Image (cartoon, rainbow, N blue to C red; front, side, top):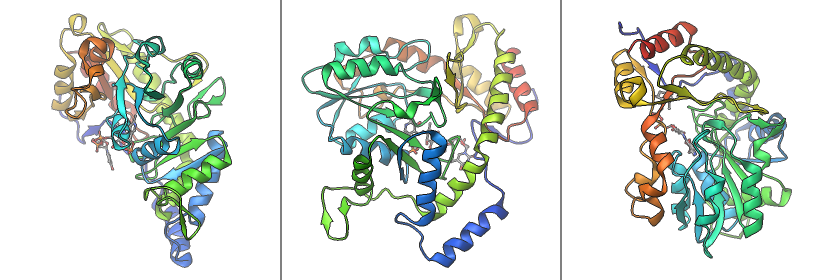
Length: 372
Ligand code: T4K
């Protein structure tokens, strides 16, 4: 296979037309209000809450600080049950709060935290569960909530991949105590860098808003050691423009997803995650799983082959978080405890998906995969 002209990366941001950004810049220049809960920030919070179908949303400068602050907002301590099959920021947020992560294995179908394995990991020190809607596929939220209620635990969803995802018409962000989003440049909806916490009461939103502003309540009172995690007006403007185009983003990503599914479904040894009943997907990633024995070559070999053709798929999420240096000595990090996650990390490859990816490129990628 000949090299493609341009590199095809796993994702690429879809920037709004430049001429639509200029009036916002003019507005910012005129206002001289460039950060700290400015008018565009307030407008974006309002429009996002409406678009996502949630009551309260607090914007953050990135998803990682949103995760760290969410744990702080609920005063989570001790041990938290979480998945090793995620981006490392999920577990890092626990570390930053001096919380011990307790890794629990995932289920094999959607690669989310397996509720059937949660209870065995609960100890007197457990205070919360932090599941991830991996690739935007919703966790088994009812079952997780049932366990949390039974044991008096909080639930904080890392919903970094789940922008726009609904279950039975309801945003997944309405489940659990808090959910966090990432609006990084690589995400479906982006504010360049950015993130958010979704909560369910006005009181909690005030608390979270104070936390991201050093812990200030008003001008003179600092209630707790907060952090600086504010989103600025330039990013809010970018977000407002993204929101204007978001439905067309989903449409295009859906077309790419369906095309991949059609072209890949008959390739022996390659499996993709099937659509979930009753779920409105967010089309944030297109992961495939490679069964080396059937397919003939390993995931890493396929990754290299694609690279030779200038196609840069990514091994999200390999290595497992539990195998990274800061976490590998934890008792729950042993491989025998995480067999399904270990297998998924070896088999998974995320194929390119972004708004400006053209269909010819999808055919090209799939023909390389098919003709190995
Ligand atoms: N929880 C979960 C489950 C997450 O997945 C993440 C982040 C977080 C929490 C934390 O949220 P944030 O604090 O990031 O808001 C990327 C992203 O940086 C990260 O946001 C994301 N998850 C993670 C899964 O992927 P990298 O290191 O793989 O990104 P990078 O720079 O290699 O970019 C990937 C490709 O995207 C590049 O090959 C080319 C393209 N790209 C990237 C950027 C930044 C562009 O075309 N333009 C760009 O500006 O981590």
